[in-house]
Each structure stands twice: as structure tokens, then as C-alpha cells.
Length: 437
Image 1 (tube, rainbow, N blue to C red):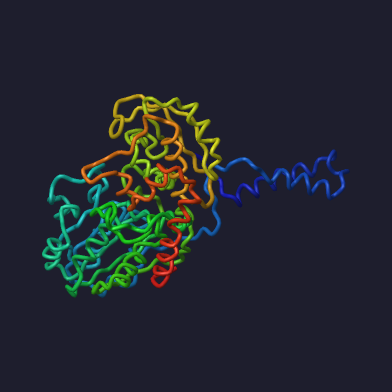
Image 2 (cartoon, rainbow, N blue to C red; image 1 turned 45 degrees about the vertical axis):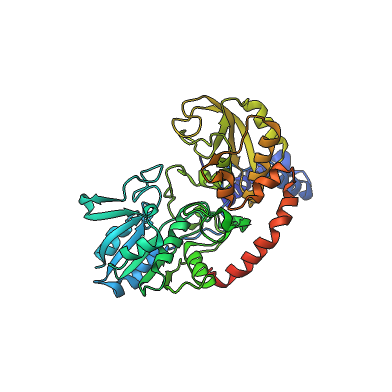
């Protein structure tokens, strides 16, 4: 899709308006009328399907700052890298090559979900793999506990963490960071976190604080609200400080970063953090749709538009689009679609549903999720809460059973939000001490 920035659009309209003003038929109009015509031309109530650009500037990542200013101090040291395919600089040079050229010896790689090169849709089934062509051994983090990982980390002098996060608790990379920090506690080993932007920092804080009754190792592990508005470096500082972790932590910060930036404003390339977030637009939609993993619909996995399509075989797309549009959810629109997932929920079945369009601006993804799921639960008898061996999937994703119970009891979102407001406010106060930007 062709993206046009706000200022570009403004200047384009200005240029057109200027041409109009040159016409003799307009020249006789009073100046005030000309001005009103111009303002009407420039203003529009139509939704914008491109992302605005407000304070665009070239942000330098922690990796780039580390390689330029600090890496030489660690020459000859042995390191374990917690990295994946997103661990690149703006020229797509991978951290593996960067630190090796800087004289750091890589003992092994610790890979999060989706593998070291982002090639897997699910957790890897092997504890480790030998990548001979890169002279690397890769261990998959999800097989380790803090105690078993602590034994592994006796070998290197330090651990370097550099992964593009998504700024939400149920996205497993922040749980991987917590796992590594738990393993390093009290060891005296240095942890270096190379900071990266939070792609959804403009959203702010939202959702319930983690209820430990719904703890899970990867999805509901990091003690925060669902959307925590912190970069990985800030999250590491927060976790160490608030939970008394004895860790030798160094955060290499970003340069020129503003915390409410859209990702494209950083002028960094979008490297999909995982296979089903191919574009920044799909990543923003993911913030809304991830909680829909808790009900029995397809979220477009196995299509060309993951986390943009959602639906099910029994759904009439025209009716669904009309009814969701009637909810008047700000910043989003719905287009009726048919799609057939090649894997995941409703694999191989023709589904009716909608294409979710984000039209720009700040929003509360937790609210949007609540409104859509509540609509489904109240209007579609086929929609059920998904379950696993632990209970309801939605409770694990949300980190609380309050979301599910509020919907099933018919609460409006503002009523439910009042219930969790104190949790959000308390977390906001605590995290404020650790912010870098």
C-alpha cells in the first residue's frame, strides 16, 4: 500500500489549492471565502489508511550503540547471545557477525520462540541444534528452567540480550528475558540488554496486572499489566529493581528515541518479530486480536493476512462487518472477507469473517478486544471460550480471569475498566522509576 505522510498530504493539497486559486473564476471571490474553501479542501472526515508521521528521526538501536561505543571493552570475553532474526542493525547486519568481528567469542546462542532465525511457527522440538555453517550451537530457551539455565550460564563471561519485543506480556520474548534474568540472579555474570523500540509504545498502559493464579512460563510470566509501555531495557531495569534481583545489568540505550513513536517514525526497517507479524500493520492489529486466541475463531494464521482476517466457517461476513461497524469502534473499520487458513484454527475450511483495518491514532487494544469478543459471546451461539489442560486459554492470555468473567456477566467495558484501574495506576507508578526515555 502506498503510504503518504501527513505533511506530504498537506503539501499536496496545498499545491492543488494554489493552482485552483490561480483560476480567474476564483480570483473574484472574497479572501475569506477562498480561505474557507481551502480549509474545507484540506480537512476531511474520511478515515486515513496510512500511518501518520509526526516526529520522524533516525533512531539508533542498542546494538548499533554497543558496536560503536562499548563493544571494544569486551574484546576476548566469552558470551552467550539471546538473539533471533530480529537482532540486526539498520543495514541488516546480524549481531552474530558484529560481535565476532569485535573480538567477542560466542559460546552458544539461546533462542526464543520461533527459533534463532524466525523460521518456525511453533516451539522447536529439539533442545539444541548445531549450525555448522555458522559455527554455532543453538539452545532453545523454552526447554529450560531458571535452575537448569543457571548451570548452562556458568560457561560464558556474560550474556547479551538483543531481540525485538512487542511490548505486551503475552508475547513470549519478555518472558524469555525474565527467564534469563532469573537464571543469572546471584551469579555475578553480566547481562547486557541492547535496547530496541517498543512498536506499540504509543498505545500506553492497559489491561490487568498479572494474577499469579494464572501464571504460565511463556505467556503469563512477566509481572506487569498486559500492555506495559516499556522497551526491553526498561523492562529489565523494572524487573530487577522491583523484584530485588541481584543481577549485574547493563542496558545500552537507544539514541534519538521518543517513547510514543510509531515504529516507522524510527526510520528502522521492520523485521517481522515472528512469522505471523509480517508487517507493522499486522503487528498493531495483533494487539487487538491476540485475546481472540481465547475463542474458537481463526485469526488469519495460514493466510496472506495473519492477524488482519478473523472469522469462522459458520459466519456470514457481510452481517459480521455490518454489526461490528455498528459498534463504532474508533480507529478501526471492518471489511467482509472469505478466507481459507492453510494451518491453525479451522485449517482447510472456508471461513467467513472480516478484514480489520487500523486507521491511525491512539487506541486501547484491551477495550477493542473486549468489545469484539463481547459481541461474539452475546450474538453467536457457536462462539465458545477455548480450553487447555490448565483451564481457559483467555485467562492465560489476559493473565487474569477478570476479562472472561466481566464479558460473561455482561459488564460494559467502562465498568470493567474501573475494576482494574487501581492495578494499572499502581503499576504505572512503580515502572516510572525505570524509564529511560
